[in-house]
Each structure stands twice: as structure tokens, then as C-alpha cells.
Length: 448
Image (cartoon, rainbow, N blue to C red):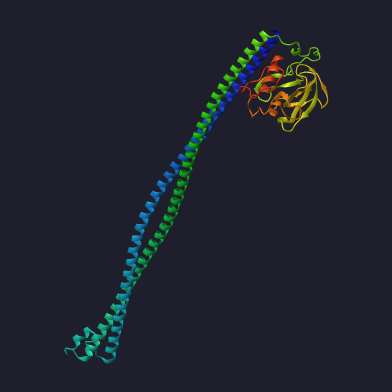
């Protein structure tokens, strides 16, 4: 009855630790899923908002630059029209000036020729100058005619010369004004063309930037959608994992409860053999042939699955079950490289080999004699925990479950279940069954 109460208390503590561990894992999964959902959404929204503000700014710049280009184009068109008009006036004035200069030169030559002829010969034909026709009437004497014509010719020549010089000044001034107006119009056209080119270049640059920013915004939105979808999938996976973990915890709790009930029923029917009574920690060493709980000093002891043997987590010293001889302490094929085996020399399982493997620092050596008071090694809180059970007859890295072909990677075996029953009989918590035990035990194998 005392041992039954101890087993119930240990099983209850193990269940509570398992429950707390599962609750912590479920809470962590929930927080991770929430963070996965929230973080990408915040980052995507922030980037999209920044890009949209940049797009609005560039669009306003493009509108202002487009207005400026239109104004420059209108001013350029007006300047071009003015330049064309000035160039036309310049061309007309140049032609008029050339014609006037030619006519004035011709008239001056004719007047000089007629005056010279008249002065030299004293006569002039009407064909040379229309003004000479009035002297052909004979109303005046030749001397008078010569005198009169010479004076007339001289006066007309002076007038023609003065008129020529005046017209030349007028035409020259008009031509200079036309040239100046054309030059000013050409300079304005050149300046406006440069301004237009700069404004159009700025407009093209902003349009290119706008296209890039819009492309970036689309990429950000697409990435945000992908992240949101991934986050949603992660959240769904986390929820499914939580549900699966909760279901597994419920199944394990039910299995443990069933095992505890069965064990309690067995305890009430059959008293525990004296050879299996576990001594209290720190008490006197058991008598020869007596088996003791090897896990009695492990802190935070928590049972895990039954496979080839029984898995546990925790930390502290692990003892031998009974009297025996150490066969091996290491094997590279096991996690952590530890595989302590010892052959029992007395008790109900005399001749069988026990192993304790994985996260254990050995404190015994090959060939050493052990008793239930011998510490085989120190269990540390590594990534794998420990596994203990029935080893193969050679004690060289193989289990009985392996030699009988019972183990497939994660299943509970007949040898693992038998060793779990032994540990329960000694006061340790039993392991968690994964399935109905695979395989059977050899005839005459000890039962507990």
C-alpha cells in the first residue's frame, strides 16, 4: 500500500509537469503564430503608406512641371512668330534699301553725265533728260539756254544728292532696327528652347521616378499579401499543432491513468516480492538479490515514451538496479555517445543485461562490480534525455528489442513494456505507451 501511494504520487507529479509543459508549449505556439501574423502586416502597411505618399508628391511635381512646359511652349511659339515677323521686315527693308541705293546711284550718274555734257557742249538732247525738252522750242538763245540749264542741273543735282543722303540714313536706320529686333527675337527663342529642354528633362525624370515608385509599391503590396498568406498558413498550422498536442496530451493522460489503475489493481491482488522493494534514498544498501529503483534520486523526473526501453527527462544520479558487472560504457551509435550496460548476477533477472544510454556522464568502468547503491553516471539535461531497458546479450550497443526485430523507429515494443513494468514495480513512473506492444517475450522471461 505504501509503494502504491508512492507510485500514485509520482505519477500525479509527472502528469502535472507534463500538463505545465504542454501548456507552455501551446502558449508559445500561439504567441509565435500571432507574431507571424502581426509583424508582416505592420511592415507591409508602413512601406505601402510611405510609397503612396511619395507617389502623391511626384504626381504633384509632374502636374506643376507640365504646366510650366505648356507656358514655355506658348512663350516660345509667340517668340518664334515675332522672330519670323522681324526677319521678314528685315528682309523687306534690306531689299528696299538696296533698290533705293541702286536708283539713287543711277539717277546721280545720269544727272552728272547730263550736266557735264551740257556744260561742255552747251547742248543736251531731250532723250538724255526730259528737262532738256523745253530748250528745243527755240524761244531762247543758245547762250541763255546753256546758262539756264546749267543752273537747273546744278540745283537738281544738289537736291538729288541731299535726297539720296536722307533716304540712305532713313533706310540704314530702319535696317539697323530690323536687325536688332531680329537678334533680340532669336535670343529669346534660344533662351526659351533651353528652358523648355530643362523642364522636359525634369518632367521625364519625375515620370521615371513615378514609374519606379509605383512598381515598388506593387511589389510591396504583393509581398505583403504573400506574407499575410504565409502568416495565415502558419497560424493555421499552429492551431492544428495545438489541437494535436492537446489530443496527444489527453491520450497520454488516459493511457497513464489506465496503466496506474491496472497497476493499482495488480498491487491489491499480489503483494510486491521482497526482492523488488525499493529502498528509500540515502537508506541502507539492499540485501543481495534485491532490486532497487535506479531513478530514485533523479530531479524533475518525467516519463516519456516506451520504445526499445523507456525514455525519461530530468537530471541527477542514476543507480544500478541490482548486483552486476559493467560490460560497456560508450557507443557512438547512440545520442550523446553513452551506452552503459551491466549484466545482473542475481535476483529474478540474473543473467540478463540492462542498459542506460544517451544524456548520461558515466562514473563506472568496464569490468566494475555494481550494486543497487552504485551510481552508474550522472544524468544531465541534454537534448535527448535518457533511455533505459533490456540490452542484447553482448552488451555492445544493441537492445533486445532490436535483436528480436521488434523496433521500427517509434513504436512500443514487448521488451520496452516489460522493463517499464519492472520500473513501476520498483517505484519509478512507467513510460508512455505508443501502441500495443510489438512482438512477444521469449519463454520464461521474468514478469513483474
